[in-house]
Length: 218
Figure 1 (cartoon, helix red, strand yellow):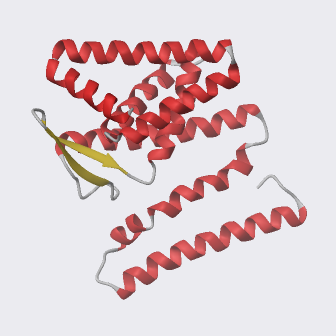
Figure 2: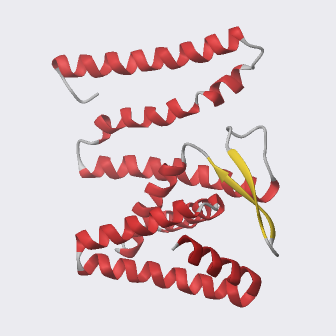
């Protein structure tokens, strides 16, 4: 940690205690049950997400290092989004971390596989971050590709509350940024309208489903 003296010692001690507690939980769960080590690790996965916060003091020294941290967080979120997409297409896979899979049946459209996990907020946060970099003309080709993956991950989530939260987050940010934010919102809403129109043109029944779900959400 980039701290000296008592603060540095406290942070190191806290990180060590957290690591020992997680390792101890995994070990005790494995020894006291017939569960394998891998299943115990998967059961402890929320704590590994929390570990990400321990990286912030290390990377928060300069804007360049903050961008490095956000790059790693984007990579993790994009990989998780690809897991979402894979499971949505082929069904639940035992080898992947314990993602929660649900089935939703829409009249006339059949069954959709919905995927979620404790890492969903990370996907949303990185989607918003990469969207704003793209809207501001600062994203690289790799970041644009990650934006596509993150958008897919939030789509196959198939929970309207998630989509509404993203939209509200963008609108609130626009209110803070004024005209610049309003332009970003306009781009985002235009993208949503064009996407819905294209889906409706290719599959009218899908367009009707999108419209009915949007109205019921309102």
